[in-house]
Image (cartoon, rainbow, N blue to C red; front, side):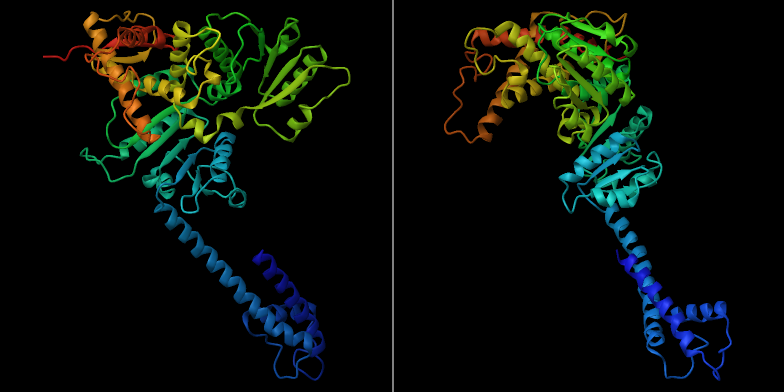
Length: 526
């Protein structure tokens, strides 16, 4: 805005100066015979505080105004340029010394969407920084986040973003290898070359990995790894997997047939999520998969059709045709929802009873609160609850803990998540770890009932600690009155013990459903 004012003043000064010289340079004054180009040159001299053609007064009003306005405009422009340089240096200095801020790495639309979401709830003193992007500073200012250009794998670029003191780092490059390298570089930099911990604050890193096998391997490593105690946590996630879970979070009714049209990564993720949800319900039937070229072969009576394709125009075309063909509900899976979504979700055609719904993949996947929750832990928690319902659910009047996951209260969800997070810690006590399932791995079994009981006791200790934390959080008066709140050997009921033993006994099958397996560590060498 100020630069626009400065330019306007400069134009006004130039016009007034030229007109004023025309009136001023009359015979017998020097330079009176100067031509248009010479007079333009003498006018330009006014911007540097002097003009050769202007000597003695009196000065006509246009010339007098120009003699003051032109150098003022020059001074104003210089001050703005100097201010911009110092402001940029000051912001860079502040950014390198910021603490507790959030950094998003990546040049694609996913990184931009996440930065937007984070900036909507940012703190003034904890900026949102987008690294390695081609977003212009003007766009960044409009969305209230900052940008740091450069190669995100170069430490100097990350250092310019103040990564050493960041609280959260999201690596959302389109290349999984780049994200993994950033995450591991940050982990390595937290310690000096001689192994000592640097005085860096707690940091959580979330790295995108699109290959399903890579995600499974990295998650298995994370579940099995011990906490190094340096305040660094790392989780890998898939954009497509996150979005598919969000798409189907309200629950999939296994009695209703569904179809998925498409052959891209998101279509595969939706199919995997549907199969997982139906497997929890005891079935994997009722799912039809078709490539985009064969969308017209979807059977009649299909309750919901998910249309997934890389080309949004193709998604829209197929979705509208399916609606006209009489299918009751069609979900268009696009990169982002747009203004078109509101129009599409209303009644489109007279006499057509079907309904279109628009689902934004990036809108659903790039939610900070969801990314902070481990996708593997979430899946294991849902599987644990599904197993609990198979054993203890049902009945005309179910208890609050005996309802489907989509209806489960937050405290029961949190307990399932805590139970899932503790799996790795339990297995380490028997020298076992979680690895990606692969052909040739020996089947896991507990050595004896004593080993199974040892893990069941650990689960009960974890549950009691969770109860104590919950009791303290709500500041409930008096002691904990739950009948199972007692030590394993202090009168705990056999029913409660059987529940803990059943959880431990089911661990190999539970992990196998998520493509993981348990293996024992080899004994240490001599």
